[in-house]
Length: 173
Image (cartoon, rainbow, N blue to C red; front, side, top):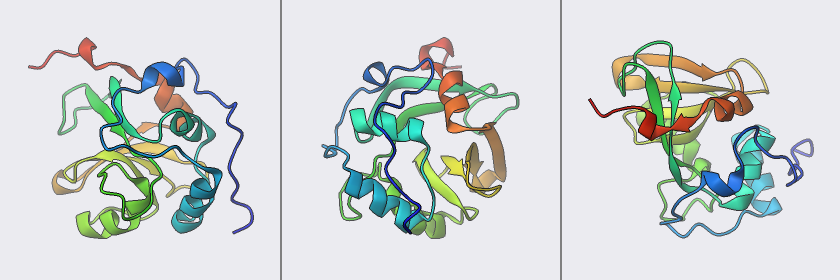
């Protein structure tokens, strides 16, 4: 659709400089292009948040520096937080990386996820998603289908980024 367009690369996440967000690009994701953004948004039928695109313009997905987001209720991951160890990029569907948000439609079917999600991070047992069930501005959700968890992490992607803390703040108990 013509309403879907790449957003300016000068948009930056609050409190999270993209240059310190990323760690390894282990799967050798190529740089993000405007064409890839347009194709992904068309395929997924959504407008991706500008803060996500700003991060992906620095590194098109991969491992993060190791973050966590506090949670007000326990999840299958921990009693008080969820992890953000990696973030999906916008890649060709055939790219071998498991960190590819373009694969959302097939993963949604495979894992029995609710509709209107874009998968940001996860391993099949749990997912962190952009949740578009309530409209064109997504919230960020924690979904564990096997255990029946479907919780809002943050009302927007920007608020999600603002809430991230180093994972080292949480002990492995």
